[in-house]
Image 1 (cartoon, helix red, strand yellow):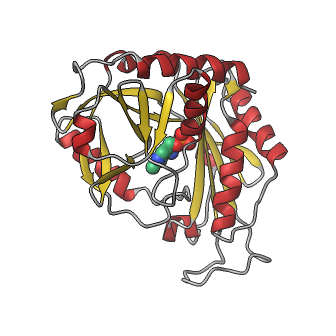
Image 2: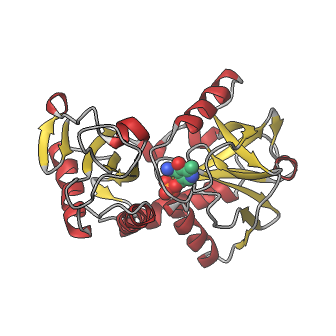
Length: 285
Ligand code: PMP
């Protein structure tokens, strides 16, 4: 693979980062994942805007403008001949050559910018979407600024491991009795004709896919209610699903061992998946 590190395109084996990088020592960094379908970027503008916001919330300087970012994304797609897959982008606060809790001077410390591709041929046609996934519920013990897309992914990773150990695919996190989100996706239930998903706040990541899916749902005259819900309510729902840049819209067919609806994907989630993929491919750049 050819990767991008601080202005250079390199073979991945030649890419180097300082051991003092604050991303490595302190998870002091943010990231974005943008999907590629048919060699084009899905929702690039949304990801670029959220990156800008994450950096600003952490008082980090923006290392690259939107146009440069787009150019790097496209160049990596080209160099790695990605038809379908993902581009991972990470910006950390960089390194001042030592370990210190105090942020280094932004005038003299340059952020570390890394991008690499992940090749996923045919990712939009994954057979998993036909059968749906199983989730378990776990306590949400993450920090209180989940709206910032930081690289602090240890607990979400542990959640995935807990799910695997329980024979499931993923975990939904619960705080004060209400579902916040999945380990790496936003969570939804469907009751009757209504799509229910938690409202935006610092308790969840403001998913780029979430924004697009809710817009398409409203345009298709589906009813959307932005509010939190419990695991019990989810178990009684007609359908459940998750959204993310890498899974698009994915039906959830079981929660904590209880079947949702018939235990197979319903009609709303597969329809939203189709609309999302169609519209996103049309708008891809
Ligand atoms: N919530 C969390 C915790 C996530 O990690 C992600 C994906 N990175 C999402 C939601 C979905 O966000 P997006 O649609 O922008 O990929």
